[in-house]
Length: 417
Length: 171
Image (tube, rainbow over all chains, first blue to last red):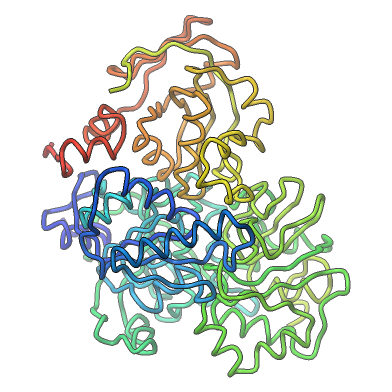
């Protein structure tokens, strides 16, 4: 019997015949923490009496969630993480460098790697064929100390992608639709593996958007094979050496097969307060919004800003709607400046926030008021997510976000494109 | 080693209690001050929770408990509030692993058979729950032996301190 991508990666890295349901121990190629989970990880690490990080070259600390810090306690947490990085010789990415998952994709993740991060959206790196999954502070503390962790080998749902997107439809719409179909716990403990003839037309930035949200259906990983698109992305990051092809076996066993014709999709939105509450954006048409947020590890990449810019070119945001834009990394920001996107966005009335998580999780840079409605390109719309349990969040693509910012109400981007 | 027989009262919650409801991001500045953070446990799901929870109570939820973030602060604040075990129809993967790593038992069973305020008895070694109020007996799904061992040591850190490594028994 052949192997799925998850079984193949875990077999290679755990040096055992890893099959769905097995418990294996594997060395990790990259372990990382961010500034809201890192302090507890460091605390666990030090309380346990661990003195050394096993493989400091494979450990990265990111200051991205509260960056720049809005409160003295969080500033002190940043200081703690900087001291830990210095003491243990780990890498650290500073305030303004970008969201951890974007930096992992740009600089670290390789096909076939095992990546653990104390952040649920660690799954993002599955776009590059890495077995990447989120864990808590204790698990990551132990991974830092031992250089390894344990996994239950997941069963896999295979998502067979066909067709091409029609105008106004993007990777975000695909993943919101899929989560709506699966349900927020529909893939709990499972691997989602994407494949099919359409993959050739889905570039890595779009794959990152899709893999990023695998966890919103409960999945442990969201995996793409490593193919020509992967090779092209890595070459663009001057990381051609990291490329290796990686495909599932033709006779792999999948727990479930799901076919998805991309040509039949339309722009989607997740309605408050769960991600799986997903419907065509036309059903939310006309809902007034006070804030639009374009950014995050889901949709803060150059390609996302390009789409938003093309819609906002020569137009203005509604006077009743704030437009916040946070590039996902310093590289994205620099390229967006070079391409003229930032100038266009500012002329359209956008506030440009520093690369980082920004308004996504309710810490700073765009906390919502009581009764306010936000349309966000992020991955979560849980009650209270953007800092106020009395606010409402709709999730959609950057195109829908840009079109909605112009009208001041939720708008199908095809009406404007 | 946690007690194998637990007795306490059920505090009932609904489906899809996210980590944002358990401990919202807006309190991230308190994450390095866990006793302060714990005062806000479940604030957006049940504002009465912190004032009514008693040491040894059980948190009883519906499906997909703990979905969302990897913040281990979620099981930590539930434990600090006094909860001795969590019962749910299903639990999100990261939360489940985090809770076990904190030495907090999570039992997956049909929680429709439990009402708010019911007295429960839990036999951890057999994964059995008895609702002393209604008389109903519930069986819980099994967890992998490695997770049982981690729970048995009171969490992942004490487990690793003792064993220095993961001990896997091939099944």
